[in-house]
Length: 170
Image 1: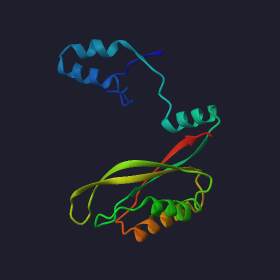
Image 2 (image 1 turned 90 degrees about the vertical axis):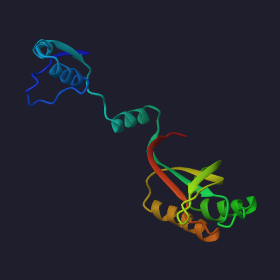
Image 3 (image 1 turned 180 degrees about the horizontal axis):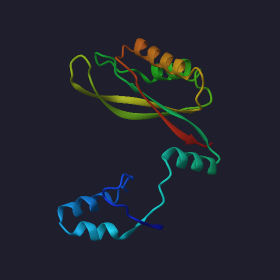
Image 4 (image 1 turned 135 degrees about the horizontal axis):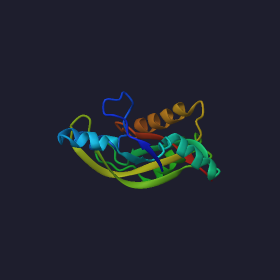
């Protein structure tokens, strides 16, 4: 830690965020502000930004920056008929795997969602496919094809999607 003299409250310089509550309290107590402002307070070096920390950590573990794609599939058709294990396995084999042959993970989950038409909250078994991939030129096309195929084949309103940046090492 370094020590730094705290600037005057009227200074145009930006204040340390940890110090701001002290400034506000000082304004509420007459006579205390001047003495408090003249003291030196410990301050930490500015924290590294999240991308810098992630990048350096990723390099340290011999990883690569990439994307984590999560696709969320409900396992019931609109009128309650369950999508069978064979139907799911066929969809995974014929539609998903050819688009991401390098690998993926499938998780079973209990899904909850709000019906867009009725507003009711529904519950159903679901599958989550988790794909870790570098940014590739046709990534959005691959994802869109999977989502479209599922919604069409199984009469779904949507397939959930979440994409986050991250570091992966295999």
